[in-house]
Length: 167
Image 1 (tube, rainbow, N blue to C red):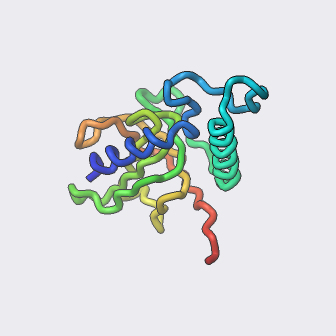
Image 2 (cartoon, rainbow, N blue to C red):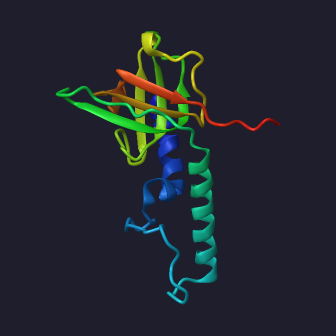
């Protein structure tokens, strides 16, 4: 199930990660901190898309709630930190040991480009579990998951709930 979620997440990232990881489709770095000069060869269609990308990125960062940063203990071997927005949750683990897995869009790219998987043991599971759209910061050793993917085994975990509309 996690592998299917990773594949779906990777496909979503492949189409939408330009704003997440800050690269254009041709993998060249993009400086989005200032608009392109007038007449720089950009068509009105690409300029409109750039404005739209910038607006969606700005509104997404405005909605990101404050979340404490996770840290690896000094001298800890194989420890990594990742943070990002949850795009998939495996709340019922197939092996039955009670842990949960969070798949995040993440610049740290622990699992795949733009994706990090966090494995949270039963005794560390937040209650209630976060939902898609919430934010997570985690630290811990990186191990191979049951499908061969790299994932963080969380030893420190912080969750920030995303703002929900009151419809």
